[in-house]
Length: 303
Image (cartoon, rainbow, N blue to C red; front, side, top):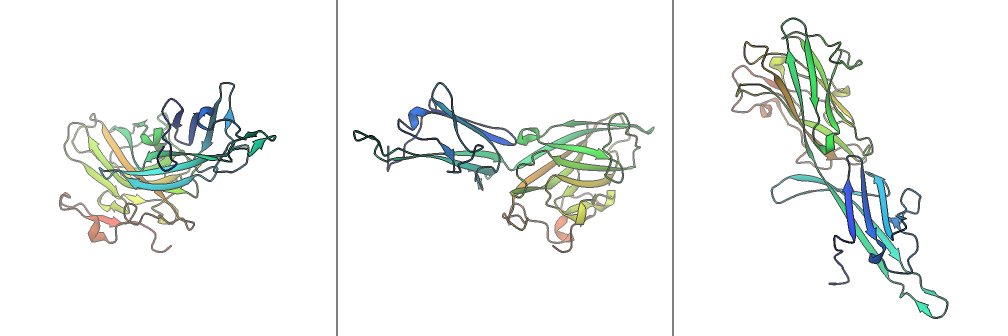
């Protein structure tokens, strides 16, 4: 013990994090005898109460953002951004039992933190055919697979499936990146960092989206309501399909990177750097862009 702070060994405590919830187990030995019921962040509700089993192990499992959970972000030594969720379990001892047993009125606090990568990759394979057929197979990204790419009709109302999807090379496709986690509504939103098209056997890569910059050469457009860039659950966009070679047999892949951003009470990102938008059309372009590629801002003009 240093300055009244103890380091709990791994034998006494374990933690787990799923895409939408966090959990922990901790032995009663950490708290000692004479302890009342334990609650997360001192919120005395059934959801926030730690449960003790017959073997003297306290446990909890709560949704992200529940029980007064704190949310912050940090960068590791490599510059990777994380969103951190935190809770504290406190226990005040009973004063005494009768006139002879005294527990010292001590307070024990155990802090739990759970770190999530704030940048996520989502990929889908687009198999294009010249004669009106295409199929989509979705590979799940990170944040334990809670993002996926979906394809829609041109009104973004009906989700297309492999069985009923028909398109040709050069046709418009209507896509959405969907986030399954709903527990962070009001706490976090996400934005598309970049969406890139590749084709098997080709070194060339084509960026369709760079945050709020869209490749107008291929009619790529922001289709979110109000041209929002930072969204709660689904970010919609469209573009014109194409090939990088003359062969339709080589798989096309669409890889999108998304950033999860903590928000304030007004729904705006609190991270003015890593969740910042591009300021002008001129800033959309890169020196390595191919001749004829034009990127333009496609976002809400007012908030």
